[in-house]
Image 1 (tube, helix red, strand yellow):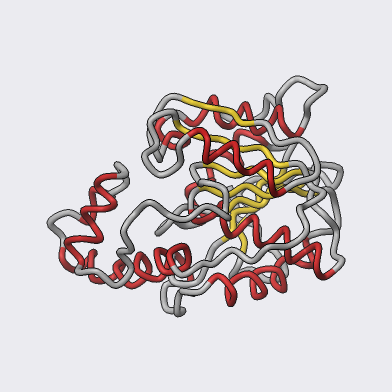
Image 2: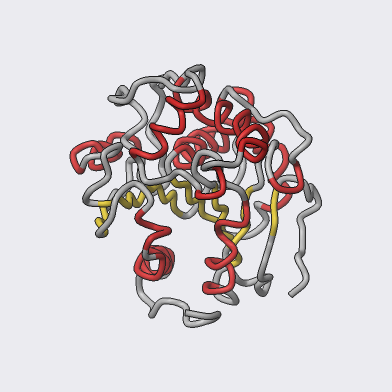
Length: 261
């Protein structure tokens, strides 16, 4: 299947295009992740929902670009890049670091008066006003950073015992951790957009009360959906998560049936 790209092709990838009547779902990855982590989602949800995978600098086809290490710089650049793709109903989904980016993107859209999302979906992330319970690792030795990933059950197998691969991805990992660890929440008006919060029942990074605290950031509804698994629950068993996302976007209709299962 040919890969289609947006007018700002570096930033987004559309693995399975959908009709112009279909809403767009912008998907942001976890720390170190790329656009390809949502390829299966795109094939599964098309043609009812067009998944737009966000490809951040420093990974995949953008490997030579400097990754952002501050959210305050990343968010305006991302909004500039996708502004031309807000011409139909759209929603945002983000996992872990991606949830934080998606939240601040929605705030930036509101500040600029751009089209508002029909829903924000966040996964594996405590509410943004809550302080972290984890030690900062973005400037730590490589062994400590990888040990933290291992605690989250997120250390890619290809990193272990392959120094050249590790050397290539470590700057991206450090930058992504810095995006989260240097973030400081600034109070502002709650979103008018409803928020759906997804979490793993055994996630050490986002306990259930911390997930429910997202309610403070919207004037609309804010349901919390829990799944078996840890911080990477949505990749360990993706089908229930994908089905839930579809139902949140189509609350009065059966979930989309397109694509492989």
